Image 1 (cartoon, rainbow, N blue to C red):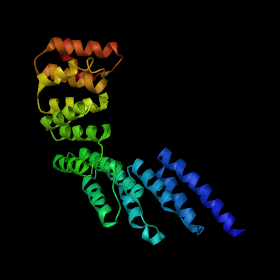
Image 2 (cartoon, helix red, strand yellow; image 1 turned 90 degrees about the vertical axis):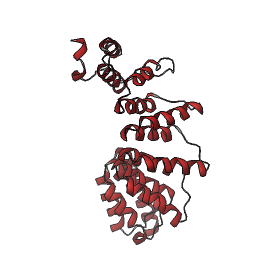
Image 3 (tube, one colour; image 1 turned 135 degrees about the vertical axis):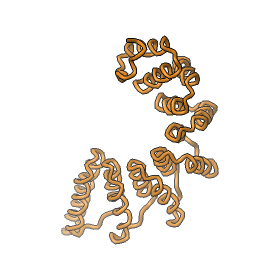
Image 4 (cartoon, one colour; image 1 turned 180 degrees about the vertical axis):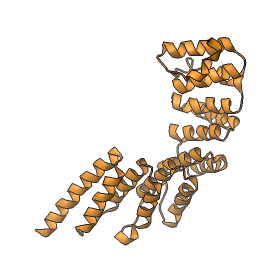
Length: 262
């Protein structure tokens, strides 16, 4: 009878933690896990992975690392999902060094990484603008014969923007186009942003002009980049056209960019 009750507790608490994870309620997820532990119910790695994910969504990367470190005390061994959640938490906290450390730890734990763990580490490197490490991760993806997806390239292009390496951003964008992987504006914006950061105004405007041809819809970020490039390049007419297009698409562009049209 007691075993049945404990199993029922585990199911109920699992559902509660899953709901907390989806809602990003990391505090409630941790409290639920502690309550489960107080009832001497043996947790499983799936539960802990969900709590790790909740901590990541709540920007609590340090708590995520503490939970990962404490798994042996709970008589649990992390799996690739657990490490993926911890790496994602580090990415959201812009802790790329920790993300790479955890990625390297997979080998020591005799766990096989996958594209999810690689992409999570890439996102961490993007957040920190760590472009040399990004190159290394992309190389590892190829050597492990993993098929890069849109998230992989978006993160790589984003690193080019944040590190002001516009040529790298364009290189990865070209590779993305060569493999005919369907892209979206979220992958194109970092490449445009990299050109803006590198003061390559003409290329910025050319990329903006090519969006309809590539069947991509500009958003507010795209329009702001186009207006900034137009202003910096002395093209007041182009800036006004970009602003008019933004207004036609019901996009709000920062007021500080309206100078040429006033």
